[in-house]
Each structure stands twice: as structure tokens, then as C-alpha cells.
Length: 88
Image 1 (cartoon, rainbow, N blue to C red):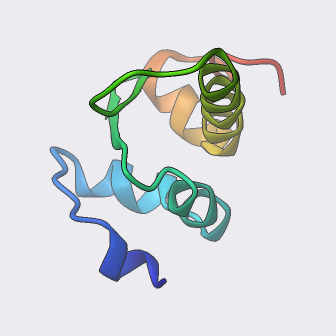
Image 2: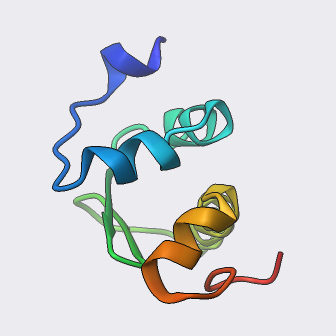
């Protein structure tokens, strides 16, 4: 499914959205189906209703790691002056 059909974007900063929504990020976000994804500054929130298995939590944590790594370094630098919250 096409990214634009799958997501409704609500952004406080169109510049942030444009910088973050690279082709790689769009592909990763398509893997979050059924979850709410929210960037708040340098924080990533990913959630859905219901019970979660340990395996699902581990998979979601790995997806979150990939999402954070996909944020361009320039975005992290603009937010707080370094390369980001995860090792590059």
C-alpha cells in the first residue's frame, strides 16, 4: 500500500516532516500498521491497543531502533546539537 494512503499526518513542523520522511523512513513506517507513531522532539512513541506478547515487544523495539536510525543526522543536530539518541 502507498504511504500516503496508509497514513494521516498531523505535524507541528512541516520542515521536520519533510526532513524525516525519507524513502527509507516511509518504508519503515509502513511496517508499523495498526500502531500510532508519534515523534515528539527527540522522542519516538509507538503504540496500539490490546495485549502484547514478549516477542511482539521485542520486534517493536527493533523497529523503533530502525526508525530512530533512519532519522537524518541533520535533524538530530537541529534538535539538540548531536548525532542522535542511538549509535550511528
